[in-house]
Length: 412
Image 1 (cartoon, one colour):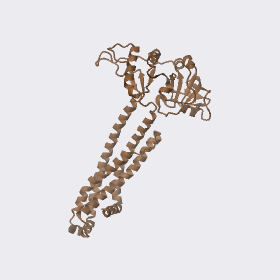
Image 2 (cartoon, helix red, strand yellow):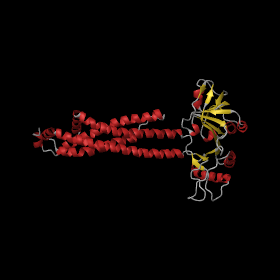
Image 3 (cartoon, helix red, strand yellow):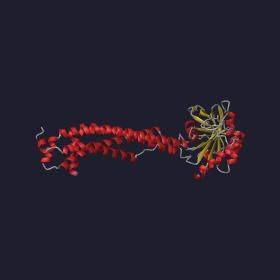
Image 4 (cartoon, rainbow, N blue to C red):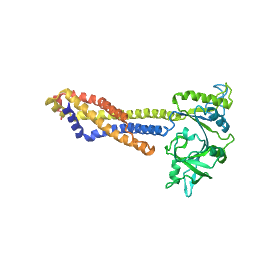
């Protein structure tokens, strides 16, 4: 069997140009499979790490009109009123003994921060919040301190900035105690957040935190309905999350003064729910990429079948000589079958290397993810190549083994 294997390698080397075309087609299919799936694994890793700070312990109460109806399933949607400041404070007072509650109110989602001649891009999230924000969203203070009670109640002109802002505006020194311009308002920096990642919760590292009272004064709400505040709740025990979410819903219904027959005009959602949705979509993309790669490999198998049939015809006299020297039908069958498998495996290995490289370029360069070695997809690629080699090589190998030695010796 080893002798037959090395003879097959030699046959592939001798007909390298013809075999190379098939290897290229197979490599293309495996590259698309491994490349896309490696990229998806990188995106999953990035998402998991970016939002691991929240985990499954946090939920939010938001103003939302999606699905809020009055009068049954056939009725019209109810326009969801904003969550007012008084409602948010009322909920925090009633629910604060069961979990850590933080209230946030948006100032600007495309703000600009300046210091001296330096300024940021208009992509800074300005958020009004309270003393519990850091606990709920799992931020740590890298420099300085959190807001004091007096600053919260008095609407002080102080801010805590994200690490990205510090890098841009204070690359060589500490910003603590410095004055910065946030959307044409002057504030004193009292703290810097530890780095959490660009996609982290509520703005990541491109974030400016301002006391709630300050945001209400400096960033008046737009529109006739007024600003809607968000209520963020951190549960220390994930196993009671569903129960406490339902309790929070009931508490807020009482605060909203909703009657029993009325539907919710707000939304209670886990903070990682959208990540779960993204993961489900990525799962669909994984299946789609696999199907596309299998179709490509199906085309490659047809090309390999043609190459092997042509090879059998071109090497008819060689087959006759081998049989005349004592080779059995089984020897000939295994030789041609090995050739098909070798061509597929070489193409598969090339495709795996190219796909892994391309996939990691996407995940590491664009997503800043770790280098991924997709062992599962590597194994799947090699298995698919082996199956393609068997399917494409079995008929040509059988045809070669069935050649009459007398006819083949005088073929040319």
